[in-house]
Length: 296
Image (cartoon, rainbow, N blue to C red; front, top):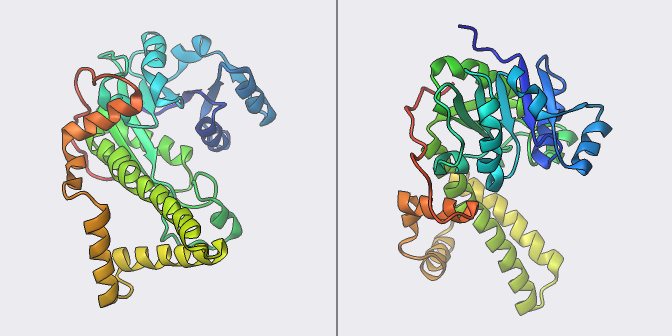
């Protein structure tokens, strides 16, 4: 059976992520319908030379429907669109939260998938100004993508991988996993931990400047350089931390981190944070479990 995707509907094509994805899909051989309701967003689509389509008029012709809309409305949007999708088509979302929470409208004759960009690595060897400027990914700097099939089979992976590589190009690896595993990557690993630490370091910078009176430029120079070296030492073992630094690190862990911080990897905590992110009281139905296929 031919599982390739010839016609794609991109819903939310005028949003931030929708515009990024559209720019890559526009250069591909896929026939893409750019769907958007908001007038201002429609203007952004027209400004890039793309035609706006009404999703209600094109959805039955599409083998793949991509929902580039906020997590908090994915349930309502899928409820409105899924009944009109053609049998055998795939619904692709860009974040795992709604899929994990069971908010997506279900049909037994559809396939469901999630694909989220990893963003360019801090360790990526950038060789051009365009690569240095592309911190988000999707235009010049290479990134990987984490993807999951919530309902589908291995026959879906190859055509989905091709689309995913196009959407987030340039892409080196597409890593396939379960929806639950993807949810542990985002939000737990990269938002609950990493993004929190990023904002925490910004707060520490502000506190340093306010408390000590040191010039902001000097504090920034010290912090930014040490972010670089801390990551290089911790993750790449470029050099060992000094003995004195190890003492300060341990003091920081004792003073700042809660002893039970690893509970964030308990599934009950994952449920809690995703419910809070989606602004719902509790998760619905089956959570995102699926067999783990080998990495692509």
